[in-house]
Amino acid sequence: MKYLHIDSQLFTDNRKRFKDKLTKNSLAIFNSNDIMPTNADGTMPFRQNNDLFWLSGVDQEESVLVIFPNHPDESQREVLFLKETNEHIAIWEGAKLTKEDALKTAGIKTVYWLNEFDDKLNELTQKCDGIYLNKNIHSRAASEVETRDDRFRNMITEEFSDKEIKEVAPIMHELRSIKSDAEIALIQNACDITEKGLRRILPFIKPGVMEYEIEAELLHEFLNNRSTGFSFQPIIGSGRDSCVLHYIENNKQCKDGDILLMDFGVEYANYASDFTRTVPVNGRFSDRQKAVYNAVLRVMKEATNMLRPGTIIAEYHKEVGKLMESELITLGLLDKHDVQKQDPENPLFREYFMHGTSHYLGLDVHDVGDFKAPMKEGMVFTCEPGIYILEEELGIRLENDILVTNDKPFDLMGNIPIEAEEIEDLMNS
Image 1 (cartoon, rainbow, N blue to C red):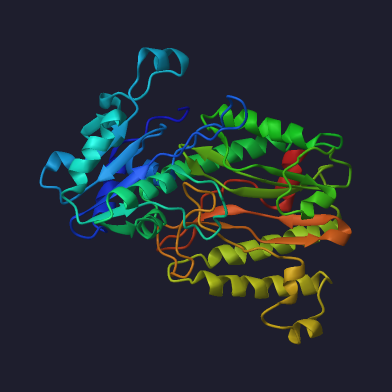
Image 2 (image 1 turned 90 degrees about the horizontal axis):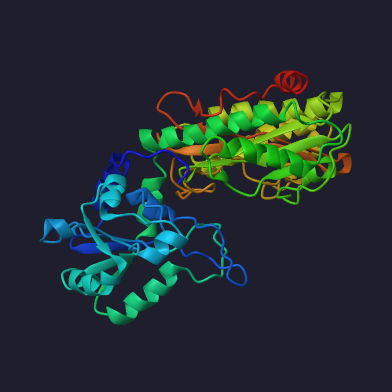
């Protein structure tokens, strides 16, 4: 892995928090993600299952973690199963984790090779009453691909039909939504690399530059700072495509007078940043562009201040909508009389601001968490209001990553330039 070694205490502490949530005499099983095929003998880059990583730090395919807090044998309460290196694997792929490596990485003493898993699983399940299994129940999950967890669930329910099957995802959503100091430090590092990327590209952006050239400059900076790259497909959209929420082609030439919306993130040690800045291609905002930009910035600052313990996200989004209504009226995009008569279920501001303002951030860009529960200290959210005026080919979005604290919200990207004048100065430096 490109990232620096993470102290295993993070994962030891995470497992302790997790064990406290399990019902008595139950075990939980976590599988690594599959290596997904492309065509012929090609594969996609491996990306570890985030729950397995959160509990162990193991960033290797074909790995299994079993947690059984009430096992009578203390050595069997935390067990890792890993793919064993042989001479062929070592030459063709590189050596895999040794048992000593696993202890250093995860803080787990009991490690078996994967070919021992079936026998050990039978031994472990004989002593438990229930089995916690994993499943992707994220609110935005839409994949139809059968995962390793799905296949494993089918096997467990068939072979161990006498055991109660329980869902582990709700526990993981609750635990992972609260970030420890060590996790916050990793997210902060991703945000700091993001800042380096922005500072690299602002002087580079000029009329005639291609959107993909900007993407390439960012990737160079990220890899040069031990990141694995983008945390999601970057959006580098100029002109009309600044109004396309998920524009990822990034294949046009940026033109004089265009606005350029850039939404990208860094992945460091599997933790994500998520960031947006909108800049003038020629280095100077027009009066209209600056007016819309500053309207979005004012909404962002007010919205950021609301990210505090006790805030309910649905109520927060309504309040942000009211702020946006006021700005859109000032910009001449909405009429205040029409707003007074609008359907509350279909507010008029949605024509120009059609997405949510905040989502959880962590190991996933759209991280797990309960959107109905009040915000708590240690949660990290994006704050990303926007105004999109398609008829003017003018889309403005701004986004930073915010840590909820018991004091005021802490902007993890607070050092990154955001005022219109700062952007212009850096672009013309």
